[in-house]
Image (cartoon, rainbow, N blue to C red):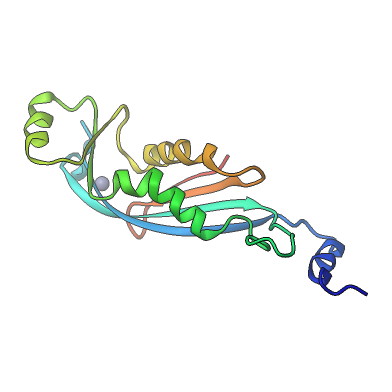
Length: 161
Ligand SMILES: [Zn+2]
């Protein structure tokens, strides 16, 4: 008997759904203001955001392959989310593009990382923006299962396809 592939053969025999979800949690600091909002969030202020990225797929069963046993290497997921979300948004000020010029222009003279978005920068809209920026970057066979963005410890927005 050949024991070299014993593990993957054992998994093949298991009569179960082999889709596994993997999650990596990221944190970043971001300021925003909600234009015309009727509460404290209309002022420029910041949050320590926590982003939970959950992928779904079947772990690779290929003896000797460097990614054997993985849905997607956490290292690859980290690099993708860093490039598409963390680097642009960490320590940025995110404002609605409809914010008046007399507010935005003086800020831009002093501060560099100001992002003007064609939407209100709520937790909900940011989740949609983040989904859009990573969903099509995943390798074949790996799906974005859920994206959850915590604005505070007790408030979060969540997307599922
Ligand atoms: Zn806020």
